[in-house]
Image (cartoon, helix red, strand yellow):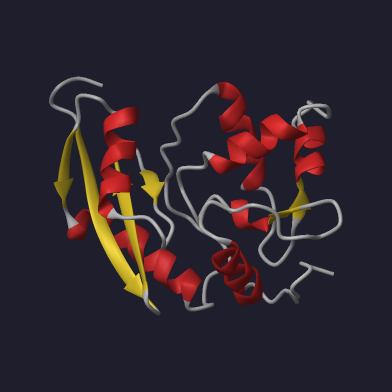
Amino acid sequence: MNEATKVYWGSLTHNGWTIYAASTTQGLCCVTFPNQTFVDLSGFVSSRFPNANLEQNEHLLAPYMVELEEYLEGHRTYFSIPLDLHGTSFQQSVWNELLNIPHGQTATYSSIATSIGRPSAVRAVGTAIGKNPIAFIVPCHRVVGKDGSLTGYRGGLDVKSALLKLEGMEVSEKGCP
């Protein structure tokens, strides 16, 4: 990325959640969780795109926000927007595997590790999932413990539970059946 690179941002408020998103000319590169702020988005951009100028552009972000809002309203089960994922090759393999978990279904950390050919890397998979920069769209909320429990989630377990319920899953205090 050169000094002239711009990263564009916009925001969305839905049911009391404020979500920030950023994109490059290649696609969406960051979506924050409701418990994160613009400062978090700005920090992500400066760490991944050190020489970029962060510029608000709601018009450019509109196609991304429309799909995200449709999802949050329960009207979208698949995202068609381009993504610009930046991470290590291991992180990217995990995030790409998350994209294969169908709407309304879950996977376990160990099943993700096995599917990327690294069955003993369950903890590393969990770490990579925790660094997912594109909340909701790269569906890290669909990953649960082996017993179906709602394990750690950077966005908060209340958000994880709400998203799984939005996708039609039964969720109890113990997790998914």
